[in-house]
Image 1 (cartoon, rainbow over the protein chains, first blue to last red):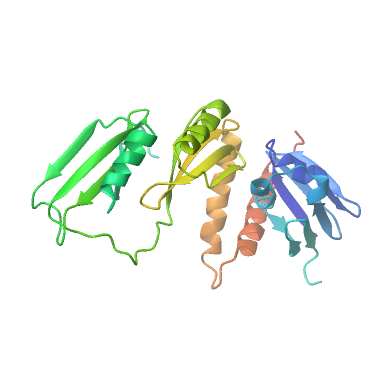
Image 2 (cartoon, rainbow over the protein chains, first blue to last red):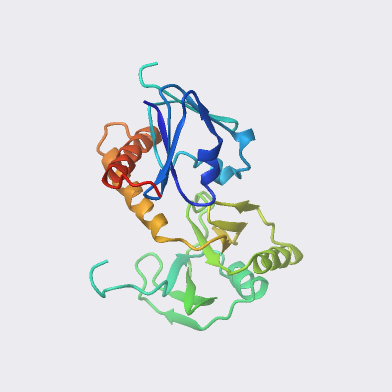
Length: 82
Length: 189
């Protein structure tokens, strides 16, 4: 199941808040946000107000699944094997 | 770090310069740094540069930036520019912007001003081609940052065991390590 882990600090929190996906689940514990979904998870840069340094480091907390796209506009993590 | 055995900041960082005059003018005159110490030595440096001057600049907090100039060793025109950089600390954005203004007023090009995750920085090149960063904190680092950093290094070491380590492999391993922590602490904040 795709998941994105985001360190719960002010500069990275917008990554978790901007994540979208079907039946998205968001938990916050142990210093991390965990965003998970049975399907693809997307984060659109336009939905955040992140500077380049944070945006391009947005997955520093790790992800589960397959990274389908990561560029200046969109991060998309999909189920493995797609 | 074990027990009470700790280092206490930078005593001095030492680099080699083939442009000593420009280096002195940059750090002493443009940046206005004090020169608390200079060493000269005859025949003590390794060949082919036995005679040297080793000069120090005060970069604050008791820390020093030092250069070696070796007599008789011309600048290598084919030498690559340094790929490392040195970052000096200031406390406030006002100080950062004052440094930017000072560099620009004195003809030093500011390459960039960048807001990072936890710091904001300006960048210039010194006469040796080394990137010199001046940076101010955006927030204090916390135990949470350090814990996350420890997981990141563990993930990196695991990733380096792979035949073809990639950032994707690192991020996926990091997720596994974070997930283990979550499993150990199932309570919601």
